Length: 295
Image (cartoon, rainbow, N blue to C red; front, side, top):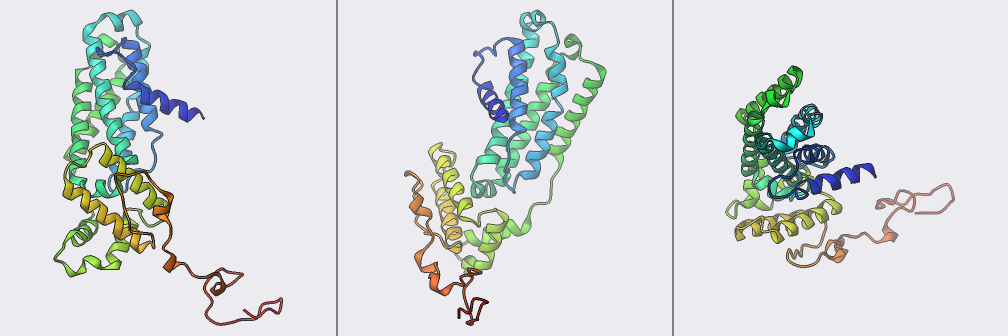
């Protein structure tokens, strides 16, 4: 249960302080909580997983810096407006990173794949914000050790390289999505393409699809997708994935979630009398088991 307490502290970190950033010491503690919280996020979407894990690793490198700042005279932190402002700016940068990481952990897999370029731009913006906030810190006044300053500089270099880096896009994933989106391409109903997409986006089980529907509804409710065409595309994607998984295609994004909406299609259920009582697989030829029963 300890990790839940850390998560709760991290969630409160963005709202617990006053509009001017609160006490300097409190701000530092809140930043530590934020980093601990993002370290507990799991299930990053495949399309952004590498970027998320790298960002979390870089954020954790800032913990020694924050620990040293916590050891500074409390009066000095609270009385110096310059120090306080620089710490508040760093906290805002960390909260921006946390928001993006949470989106990539809990958000719609289809939406994040569709908007992969826009999401990457968000990562670059986070890198810029973190870099600027770290550059603005008054290390000498804070009395930060040489070792920690070197580690911060290493982190900043990594953030700059991450922004310049252009990883090779998953061309097959991009092409498959283009084919499915295309209304003119006769291959848009190709089950092999849909199966491949479902596997890459990890949307091939009923639980995956149920979680995705919840994420899409939340996205629509929060107006995370302003374009009606994008909403329809996501809905179409869900329908196709549900169809190949043998799930009812009816999708209602603006209503309460019903367990009935994710029931297996009755036409795809094999009657029990056609299943082997031992292996529960469909029987092809009758066999005689040790009990003497013919099946």
